[in-house]
Amino acid sequence: MMSKRLLAAQTTRKLIRTSSTLHSKAAPAVMSQPQIEMPECEHRPAAYNGPSYEQILETRKNHLTPNLVAHFKKPLVIHAGHMQWLYDHEGRRYLDMFGGIVTVSVGHCHPKVNQALSEQISKLWHTTNIYMHPKIHEYAERLAAKFPGNLKAVCFVNSGSEANDLAMLMARLHTGNQDILTFRNAYHGMSPYTMGLTAHSTWRYPLPGVNNGILHVMNPDPYQGIWGGSACRDSPVQTTRSCSCAPDNCQAGTNYYNELEQTFKYSLPRGKVAAMFAESIQGVGGTVQFPKGYLKRAAALVRANGGLFVADEVQTGFGRTGDHFWGFEAHDYTPDIVTMAKGIGNGFPLAAVVTTPEIAASLGMALHFNTYGGNPMASAVGMAVLDVIEEEQLQLNSLEVGNYFLKCLEELQQRFELIGDVRGKGLMIGVELVNDRETRAPLAAPHVLDIWETCKDMGVLFGRGGLNGNVLSFRPPLCLSYEDVEFALHILETVFVEHMNKRPRSWRTITTRNRGTH
Ligand SMILES: Cc1ncc(COP(=O)(O)O)c(C=O)c1O
Image (tube, rainbow, N blue to C red; front, side, top):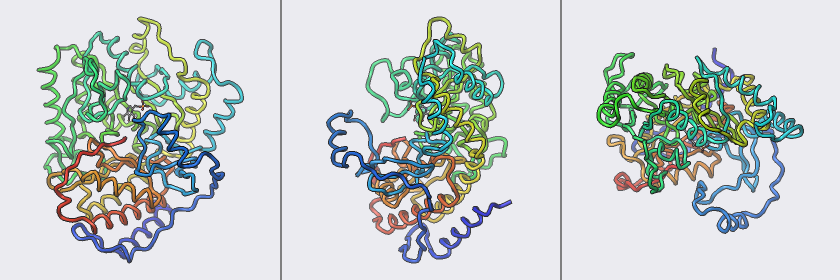
């Protein structure tokens, strides 16, 4: 049954559609569009009373590492947050469609998570695991219950890179093998060990040994890759490429799988692989979804060659993809190791590796220790996050609101030729902007940046992903509402119209290099 909120949202949407005649080639002015107000929010943050904008810029220049990335030409000073909202130092409110880079899962400063943390803070902060504080045990049990099969051993750490570091170590120790496979276009972290897994030139330092024992295989990308069709993705929106595959027999998936087999035949010692890592949907790489069935077959191939399959759920875990709690579940396989971070702690530095007791036992070859992993505060937060996801049915919200957003974006795609592709699931959504739909060449950097900045000025924040930074990345807190989606769509529509109106033909040929953020 359609909810009242969805009905209201759809009525507003119809209003916009009938009052504007936007189309792909020559977009009209926005004059006739009704203005959509930013959705109401009762929260009133305390006024900002910190250092001035200029002082902050000065300190940043003098005392923070110069490579620290800030979004936007005029970076924002954000001093308060509430659920899906952020507030800048001048009191402006923004709809946060990026969630602190996919991290704020249940909402900024969620009252229940705040309460759990403040109760723990007044009891006990930290002991390390040399003593048995109760919280880590309660939490490990709760988290392990979220996994199928024998994935019951939990190892807590503090960041996604640390989790993937540990997964690499476990896989190598457990199998006795060295080689690890990842996809080109993957992002698994920036520690010296995981930088090798990450396969974007923009995220790699020229250091010896980074690639030691790591192979990057062809990315099974149904939009930008060499194979792809109209039924490859597990998403409400498909690519515009055609195919004639039967629903359960994705030919592109088979082609990419055959290509993976070539790596095993030519580049690896027989039966001697340590692991393959895969995100369930590539996040930093620009919300890239793999053909249906591919990961399941890849996992079987890796196991047949003595290796383990590692699912990196740093972005896709905790209900974000809507239909499942973990992204790998939709790919119909059970990994040997799962790594998670970001959404697990709603912004608290918490991450984990979950695996089988047998694989975890491989760490027993030496002493292994992590000072903060699963400390009482982190465990209290992690448990509260699980409670909120359940109590507020956030996975379901992600499915319904996210898929509604996706379908509306698909409508926008039909009217704006700069939208080459819309993809994703639940509240993990990518919109790829192109210069030319036929060649799929990325929209040039200055134009993407202009669109991004204007949306920010109009009150909507999101990220950019992909090697060329031309994929708009939407990963809001899972409490996003239909009204928020309407607001975001209205802003996007307005900004796309503006872009099309000022777009000279010559822009189509620009292919300046751009750099994605996350
Ligand atoms: C899929 C994935 N894995 C691992 C990481 C690394 O996480 P962290 O930045 O917490 O080290 C990220 C960060 O964006 C990520 O997106």
